Length: 205
Image (tube, rainbow, N blue to C red):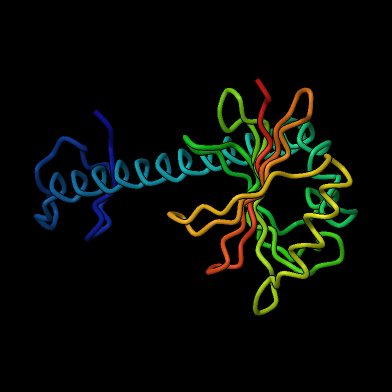
């Protein structure tokens, strides 16, 4: 048994097991039951906030680990596309993402590919067992015209040899293949209607 103070009249040394205050008749039991319930509710709220903070901290640390560890191996592929794109992982404007389809950097910042202005949308690696990486880039001007596209293809021809071209009518895609490399197949897909270019690197088996 503990002695408490009546919250209404202020009388001291009232038993905490008493139903009512002997001086003023105030319902002490009901008051302290509500007070105890409120304390428990506050503890649950604090615990919930703590769990949320912990989850965010774990996710943040996981993202930081992914930035420093998993992004680096893909540099050897995208660094060929110009100095600007090779330093994209130093930007503060990207989000690290991991989904069932890919692990990579979802990027939302302007990046030039061979001096052509554009916006890098995605750099990813570990797509599938045979896919080494994926790069998706969208022209920032009204459209990536044929001259600019030819310029990119020409640069890639110099890096990887002469391409094989075909047009995918069903998906409205211009497709350029570089598959004569000993250990890697490269494909460039361009969809005119959305002005977006995708470059895929896969093992050549």
